[in-house]
Image (cartoon, rainbow, N blue to C red; front, top):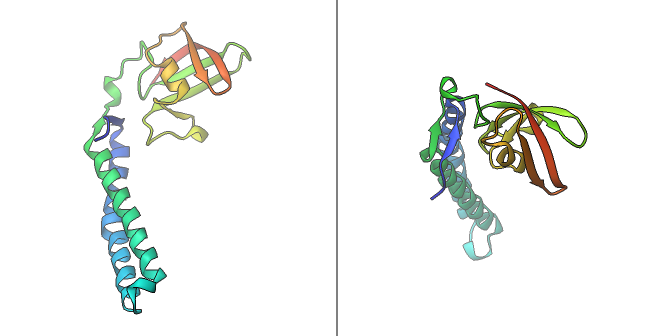
Length: 157
């Protein structure tokens, strides 16, 4: 179905809570909306019924995707992370070789990525470029803006 997704315990719990909300709150609401629309007459010309059915289909697709993500999730324990090289859940300090600007990112799964708080996805161009590198190494990142070079300054948890 989909590939393994590495997450923290907290993220897995958030995913499970979101799934419960969809199944326990949103799914019954979608069913009620369909029932109400069905009561309004001829289904052939009932746009409200069509919209409710479409919304239910989208919800069911989201539920199936989330169930797949949870089934393929693997929890990473922070105390088992090797900080000798960049890996998922490590915080890496980089220096842009062109601008000399330093940035620190935490490498996380796609579900946890949030650039505003310094969390980038392991599947992003920078995430892929620095993965497996050690302090002092130069990572070459192919980004939409061209080839970027970053020096790995530090790796921490």
